[in-house]
Length: 505
Image (cartoon, rainbow, N blue to C red; front, side, top):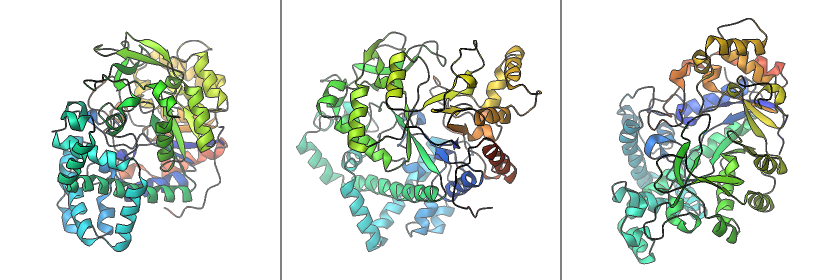
């Protein structure tokens, strides 16, 4: 569906300032929403919100639906009577860049304390809200069981657990519920608190005229609650539970050997036989959390790269046809018009474009890709159409300053020639101005580019297994000068959407 002309900022909640080692849904999240509103922005784009696994990637989560407990604000728990100031004061000082290992080590005991206090101190209203959440969240029981079982098995992948548990034998699951009720309760509590805090934050954003653009990865992790609970929907070895076909992409801009993600490929035939009910639940759940959805790797709904188990890279695989047309028709029938943006980067065929355009999903244009090749380059602004979203770069790109500094003098000159202006030391603002001036209905800029940060602030480098996702900004960086400059460009290029008046400074 086409969206109104507007602009926004890409920033994952883990990147908020916080004294607890990782961004959370507390005061700085609300301050950022005030900054969005005051600078005239209409969209806040985030990455997936799920509980992260090995490598800390939000694209490899223990669940496609659950929230990341590390985003829970301890200060909100304190305000709700579940933690004390003394308990918060004992939290150790952690570095600005997220050290996920230390955050887990330090924050989980605090969350466990809050859970124990909830059992003792919660009000009747809190207990009623918790019970209602547990009754209505259809996915919650499987997720809480999965997390408690995983911890009991030392973090091992579900397909290596005791056979009766791995295969979900009812007697074995009932026995586990009885002996591990407190741990199952803990994970339900975490999801309840995450949902409460996120719902309040989303409501605040919407009241300020901000829409939240969520991110839906096409695939889910093999070691996840969904694959354990519904193995019939994935290409798995019936004896070992291991993937027989793995997801990825062939060699591309980001990697000469392709990207082997390792996620199991869907059993699309079985999904379609069951009227795509798994996908309907996934979209329904996500639309309670966000206003708009960016589908990561959209092309996989038309055809997907399948790599056989045992391959070490994604160089050798096969393209297979997916029933994307049938899926989106059914989703529209069940859920109405879908507020979807299609991530259509990389090797895109006419068939993928036809699927995208059939449902009027906006595609994406990345300015960092625009200045190489000839005038047919699809990322050049004059080749864009209105029903697109333009970015300076995404979470997978270097920052604009870092990208520009890595270009040769000749390649830098090509950018200046296109911009048609005198060379400046503010290439980030030059590309923001270019993005805002395009015909694309939406322009979304990573916060790192608005702040003019170099490569050290990059969020993710595809193909790099560790050391990603750790960037956070400092509260002092959101200055009135940055706010006013961004708002000025937003007004100049007709991207200011009517918003409620903001009272922040």
